[in-house]
Image: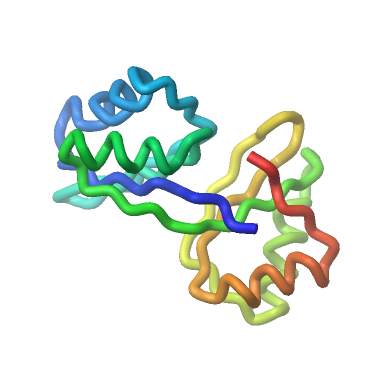
Length: 135
C-alpha cells in the first residue's frame, strides 16, 4: 500500500519553506516528516502528513507548484542493520530506487522510497517478510 507524498517546488530563497509549513499548520495538518533537497535555482520539499489530499489542495491554492506522489513506507525494528537488510532485498531483486529517506516513528524505523516499479517493490516487500508502515 503506497503512502501519498507531497512534493513542493520552492524558490531557493529565504522564507519559502516557512510559507509552506505555516500554510499547513494553519490548516491543522500535522507533518509526519519532511526532507528538503536543493539545486542552484530551486528546492524540492517532500512531505508526509496526516492529510495529503488537503495539503495538496491548500498548497496549490497558495500558488505553490505541488505534486502528489505514491511512495512506499516500510517499518523496521529500530536496530542497526535493519535498513541495510531491507535495501539488500531490493538490490538482490533488481529493484531500482529513485530516492529514499528515513526517520523514526512510533518506535520503528521507517524507510520511505520511490521506484518506477511499484508492483515489483510490493512483491519484494511481501516475499521478504517486510512490513509496510502505517502512517
